[in-house]
Image 1 (tube, rainbow, N blue to C red):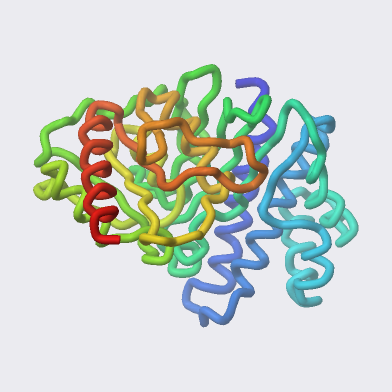
Image 2 (cartoon, rainbow, N blue to C red):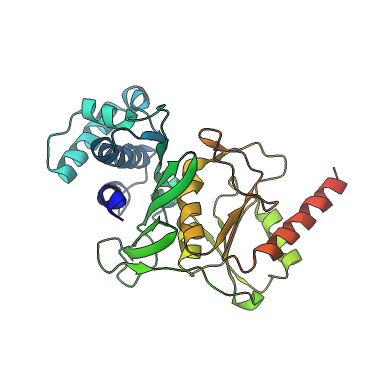
Length: 323
């Protein structure tokens, strides 16, 4: 856990920043344009990259935002607000030049160790005050081995969200605000009526119709279904609060799977005893930069994985006969 302590702190700071942005711009106010997402996105990544630059300076980084984008695409008022928020959270003077330096740290750098960062996963959920996540994964020789995920909207008793991490093949959960750390495990549920299935809220992310056909073929029509934003879906499966997440793209879609959307969750679920594979059962392929080389993603508690793979294979075979 020692290796992840600076990341814990940075991710917690990023969650605080995101909540502050929501309170200032979204709660009781007008939801105008992309400004809240822009401010939270750049601010969150700057905090995490700052921690990496200080504690793991030789490591590489793969992340959504870059310093050049901050300079060219972010308005002066947004730059000023991001700078002020970071100064307040860090209790030190922060300049736009600091932010550019942090955002660019390690990007494009070939290294044995690479941090993969998603500063806000589930931007529409963030704006709609639903669920979103902040995800960080450590890759060693292009394989994700450790992860930290903050889920501020996770349904915890204190309603303050949860912090998840995986290291050394073990998965853990703790209150986002700090507290007791407990080991978590994927569920052992197999009976269709007891299963809890998750899918993406956004239809552009995955085909709801294809997922429904897979559920029918697997005999899961009686299972509870919830649509949820962000990689929190992975966290729920790792914690045993859900059992299956199908990421089946629309047929003939060329939309890539970004590694920052899936690396943290994959590490967490596998460490908790669950399974994450391509639609044919093969491992996810992390070797090609920022995009996964996969046709889809199946995330499960492991106990029902083979049944789901068979249902997906039946769907693909049926679609091939109609092409």
